[in-house]
Length: 156
Image 1 (cartoon, rainbow, N blue to C red):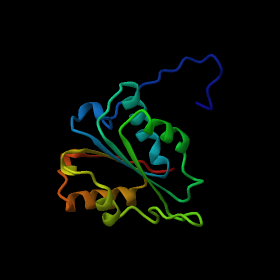
Image 2 (cartoon, rainbow, N blue to C red):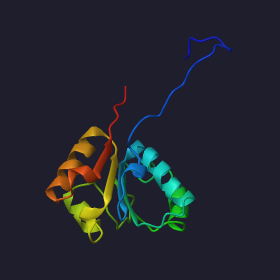
Image 3 (cartoon, helix red, strand yellow):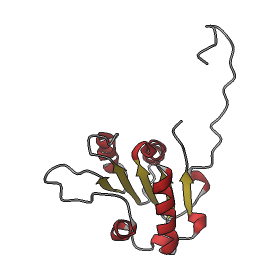
Image 4 (spheres, rainbow, N blue to C red):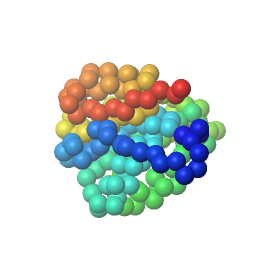
């Protein structure tokens, strides 16, 4: 695009992905984000709010620090419109932080999973090592692979 002259016609197409809750029915959702992987999951949360979808959602959101976490104010507002539980996981927590910290691992996920968790739909977006670890954890916990949806990306 940078090489195009102003006024040049261009054709844009997409998106065409299947990383959407519309294709996956369930009693609720578990959204697991790492870093910028929060972007697609925020889109889902906004859509749930716009549709007044009151199915329960659990958002587990890992970031390097809380200052690096984006959308925190909006997430707080969405909690008032949705049945949304949030778990923030700063890798480096601020002084005095008493909530979860470090990395998303099996123990952390297990502590926060809702009842009947194996029936929920899971959407996971973040760096490849996190996706691999979360997929393995969910498989070990007995979540059917058909209920686990990932969005993989690589920075270039």
